[in-house]
Length: 319
Image (cartoon, rainbow, N blue to C red; front, side, top):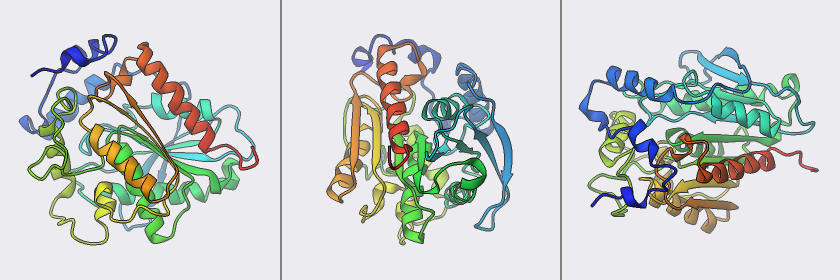
């Protein structure tokens, strides 16, 4: 059964812009080249970033980071570590600059977007360690960049949302740096989704853009030879974390037709049960990456909510 009739009419053009492709059907270099063409539809950034190289605090190679600084910074406001999407295996900050730039411009805070290493060449925990190193660097730049180190939040889309959730768990487990909020856009959280041990059997999710087969490929690439049987399993796949208490407040936005719909709802439920303030938004008729059609009313509602959440989470503590 096709779910095309359930897709919001203003989002339907996205189905032709991004025809269905199973990621394991081509070499990784070809997958990345095709993805780069698709990302070319994104608008240019509203802020030109500074391109920096940061040292890893985990013994890895230096990490490229794109720093977006708004023309006017809110006094006493925070900052954002942004993590791009791409299924753990593709994408780059270079190709997806519009999102972090608009976060910086709207929230009035610096945004550091991380060029983390990609799987399968660099499986777990390489991407997580790169993101944690960027968080540690940003926390150390509070005086130089003029923000409150106690108001740093993490944000990301798809795989980037999953890595942002993982970073929140990782920072809690190893004692920092402190994170004030999680801004998770259709996050990729559960490595079981679409596989034999998938706990979700929703018949109307995952037909378009990011499919079950692609999800299996992305997670297998990230997992490498990691057995996911130690205390770090929540860093790998946040849905595997047994204890979600003590995590920062979360804003989760997803779509009713997105493959990640069920895992996102389940994660929101578990966060709430663990005492974590959680705001959840599900958009009817929305597929994965639906906001790539910026003029759709659905995307406008999504963007308004996301940007308001970013501004609220990074607001000065006294305002």
